[in-house]
Length: 528
Image (tube, rainbow, N blue to C red; front, top):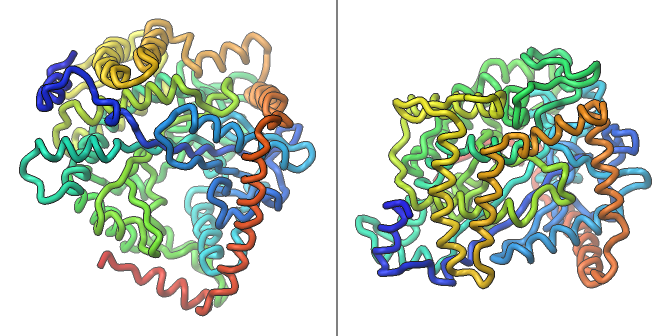
């Protein structure tokens, strides 16, 4: 066991985690495009049977009307989370329009033009109109095609008992929440340092339909007449084809303390940006093309592989909540959909993620600086584009290491965290088995999802679109009409859908301000 983890345990005179410490709180948010049988993006509105995308607790949309997002409640039981997610999928598949299915790949389906991508609609309330306007602004700033990329967001927090007992042994903090925030930032810094490992292990987007790059510069190679790829790519979703821009590249966010993070984003949300000001030129009076012309319209526009989070129901904005109450949990945003898994991920992946994130929390985490930030970005880019390349090297501080050597070293340390979690579990060794499964991918890159995708495409002489369409059809067969024995959940989802429609109508009736006044107040944003 590493010295860091030994010292973490020695503070409590323990050889293993107490059972209550292993009750990790997790939530899953899974995005998927609705597509037709021929792999084209759905042009139909969000299905009425799935309720209101504005107010439904479990089913919403992301950028497009055709981009579903399925959300699980917070749970400390992996099987419970996955069972809920499967039941939710069963319900969705049973209520999709005739001929539709969910696209199981992160990179989008066949798209000929941006005009085929309908913006998500949230009704006529001020908040609903704001959400659609935000998406219209994203389209003008980054292009609509970029917004059709899908992924999985994994929400993670350690239980209160863990934080309380850790805090009692700490020094130099004014409150338990200050300590918790400090340690989550500690985790986030390490996550950035080592996120290339997740991209290598779970990246499943080595190829893309050639239509996706139309009019955009790229360095991809032709796989066939309809597919572009890179031979050793792992996760093109996380590369230059993803949610990147020169404007966002100018924002340096440091995670050494919460105030710095908040101030960096607030400044970006308050700084006009000339190219975005040009978006509004020529707009008619009363016509809006974006929420504002600042570097960021909202906090969530800042793309990051991980985010500090705090929820609240009193109408405060995300940065206001963080400033007032500190970090509650973290959101991992670096995960592709796995097209070989009906839900996009499985228990083994979750067990590894928990072990990885616990390692990031317990291992040493020096303060970050801009030089290290640039090194982290280069490591991530090399792994995205060339992760399976034999002998690929990454920069580890002043050293250069092969990805394989560094990955093996990290997995040995992550296994120490897996041992801690297994020591508290009723089913021992599951976390360690999850780490062993990832070690096999490091030893043999052909076992990674990205390599499997390309191998299948070659063996079956399929384009990326044909491959993803076939996998989507197989998942449709697996999940549609398979809710037998799950009647209570299906009834609950139906009731939630009906209630969400009523809640949307209530929100629309409650508005007192005109949208012009609402938007003016929204943009008059203070952290106080």
